[in-house]
Figure 1 (spheres, one colour):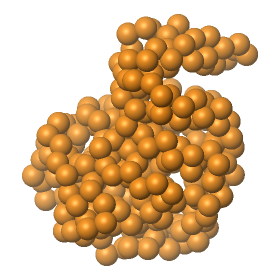
Figure 2 (tube, one colour):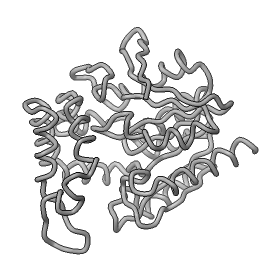
Figure 3 (cartoon, one colour):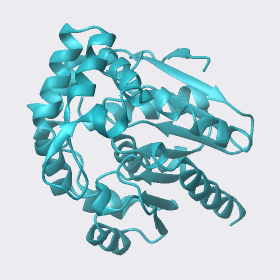
Amino acid sequence: MNEKIFNTGRISINYVESGTGDITILLLHGGSSRLQTFKDLIPELAGKYHVYAIDLRGHGKTDRVSGQYKIQDYVTDVKEFIEMRIQKQVIVFGHSLGGMIAELLAAYYPKIVKAIIIGDSPISLGVLKKHSDDQKEMTMLWREWSRTMNVEEIAEELKRMQVAIPGEDNTVPAYEVFGKNHPWFDFMAESLKQNDPDMLTSIIDRFDETYSAYNIDRIFLQIKCPVLIIKGEEKHGSLIRNIDISHAQTLIGNLKYIEIKGVGHALYMQNLEAVVKAIIEFVDEYSKA
């Protein structure tokens, strides 16, 4: 993908752009990832829409800003990118952290957001905190690797990481589950090497401060644009519970949701076709309304 840099005056944002449709979609990746996570999704959407994807601050090739990784810091970056680079209303698809950012954008900057698609983002602060706590040991390892190892060394460590086998109590090295040559290892190793270690520290040691603005009841009550939630199944690791969907429906009037069977939190990385179908059907229905 042809990567470009846009400087907002505060931060240099790495991004890609594809397609020329009248409808513009902005893709926001999850925590510790980078825009290349969308390499298979972008071509599927660019035939119909004008698509942008960015690296969030402290991720990929976008600037590192030590000590400034509150969720509202990400929101400000994306707001300025939309206003200054895209210069029109957008539909935002965000996965995980990216979806949380999309929610805040829609709530507080409705003039620049036509609709949002939330990709298995935790819509409960309690679920987010539990997930962060459960992943804390791993995140600490990732931070250390990003500081001290090269990409090849990180990939080998990722292969040796212990992962749970679905339906069983024991764990095994990740390569036994995915295969030694699974492309995720190299992709994630490169992503971690490009992570700002302080961004990971903001999750490990400053959770309450980092997510202080993530008040779901306040945010969702202010969202007036169309919203689609795409979730996986809880038994496969989705971070959205059915009870969270029910609560969201009491707060957002124009809300649709779809559960993709057989996948967990990773969504499009596990079933690209189903996610593309859900996005296109939602966008086309919204654009005709």
